[in-house]
Length: 163
Image 1 (cartoon, rainbow, N blue to C red):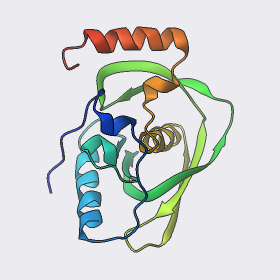
Image 2: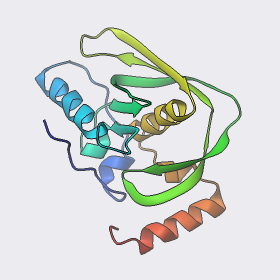
Image 3: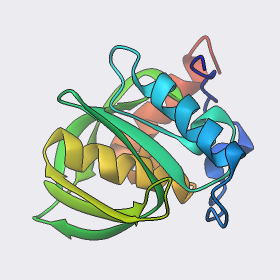
Image 4: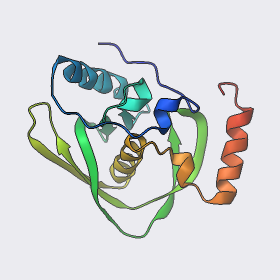
């Protein structure tokens, strides 16, 4: 399946909490295929279901050559003090801002067989796990910015050619 178009800032699906996946059926399998196809494009570390217009708890990731997905992910552990790390988002194209993130994160969820899975990592993977889980809770990285930085980012959004 081809990658799906990415929803942009301002689309209500990006600010809504996603529903848990109750049944793994052909629709969920197709969603995972679309998420994997969408995240394999260059420069993408993760894609959450709401970013492709589906309000379900699922995301894909692509970090250091490891591509995967998680259904019903929950961020179960973060470690270390938050540090500002450069971050962008496919749903807010062209912007890049220092975002407070923990240096370690662990996510638990299930796979397409309903088996439990756990993904943990540091650095970019930790950042991606936090970022994508936020999407499923209706939170964009812009919401995490310190107030002065957020003001700058929102001005950039208003001045962008895509908004």
